[in-house]
Amino acid sequence: MSHCQQCGACCAQFRVDFSIYELDEHGGSVPSGLAVPVNGNTCRMRGTDHVPIRCAALTGRLGEQVGCGIYEWRPNPCREFTEGSDACNRARARHGLAPIARTKGWSLRSTLAGRCDRGERGPGLRHIPSGAVGATGPRKTQCSPYNQG
Image (tube, rainbow, N blue to C red; front, side, top):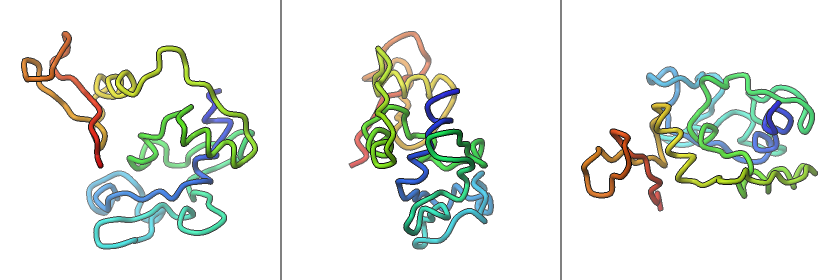
């Protein structure tokens, strides 16, 4: 069982805002019934819009055994959250859980490259065709992090 399946602290710590175009009613995959509107282009996972925070899709007991009821259809902020990241460890600390050490060789670039190799798309990834300035390695495309700031 992964740390995430024993934890769930992120689902009870952060507000989860995402584009309305991720909702199933707009062609995405997130169930519309689990989101509330924020403004014309943004919505928020139910349960993360008030205190105490607990995402409506979270099942189980924090720190013991948890799961996401919409794991296959979860929004991008949830897909992009990284086990062992600073945000992860802050959430764990708030819920009285020990921090997780990043695995040896962890890097944002290797994480994003793995996501690219699996065909994932979304914020935080920039796909560079091979032969383009900045492209390296044998892959046909290269993923690299970019500053969204």
